[in-house]
Image 1 (tube, rainbow, N blue to C red):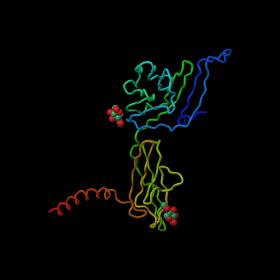
Image 2: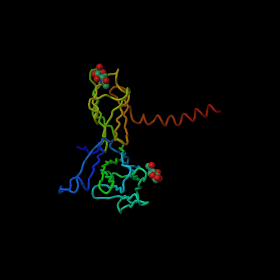
Image 3: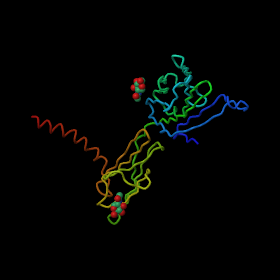
Image 4: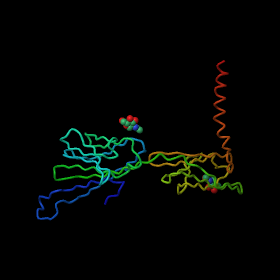
Length: 250
Ligand SMILES: *[C@@H]1O[C@H](CO)[C@@H](O)[C@H](O)[C@H]1NC(C)=O
Ligand SMILES: *[C@@H]1O[C@H](CO)[C@@H](O)[C@H](O)[C@H]1NC(C)=O
């Protein structure tokens, strides 16, 4: 069985069956699948789709967006492929050597399970399904302090991280790296004491093609650094460094 998105499948269609002449069937399918990394791409990038094991001598090759939409067709005895009137017309080229479909400036709506069909010797047509998922870069998330409660020298902290895109993974980082939470999610629920609190909590959101983050700073287990104070440091450096350099050069 073929799991969409994790396997590259080859469907072989035998168009004529010389050894089963009595059979009513004029064709049958054989499917074989091999694992393939799902192809993810950042919207706006250029993508090449190819089959890792294209047969050598084929007579015809066709790339399809789905079963209904044919992008291009190439008869190998012709110099050039024919590009059909589709939304891809001015954005695709065929790699003649490896049969790759090069797509420029991919967009989210280009996501699909593409189909590559090759006709081998007028009798055997092989079909490969190659899934592509185009993703937008993840937007900058926002950390909200849901709770800071100090009790017996301990601070109970709940921070939540929200990203406008819901299809993201969350990872929290602190002073000593990744914060191990059994389930990494948008909510960080921890207890800290003066010996182990972190001076910052960073929430990183990611999808397979991009990541983004937000950070909050603490000056004690339960006390947030004022955000204006954080913004103030670079301004101070920008003013002071040239001044000090200027003084040194005089
Ligand atoms: C995509 O390919 C085109 C044409 O070769 C090139 O001009 C463009 O810079 C490429 N874009 C990216 C994001 O690499
Ligand atoms: C900090 O130490 C306290 C007391 O040992 C413990 O309960 C808490 O889980 C620790 N917090 C972190 C984030 O390691």
